[in-house]
Image: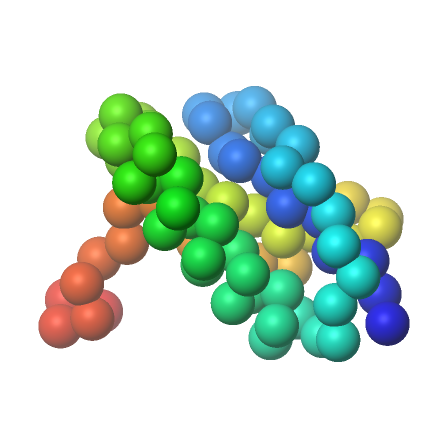
Length: 76
């Protein structure tokens, strides 16, 4: 099972939020969505700044990104 790395994206900066071994990118993207939801509740000021959580692999290739202020399902 691969390592996935999670970053808080603030403008052009990537702030490390940790890494974890997970089954696949589907599970990692679910974790990223959870982290984004938690961060938006704890630090609501980040929502207005266009921040996101991204998932990368060990080679720093971005695999997934989710905003802290997601659009409601009916707007997608």
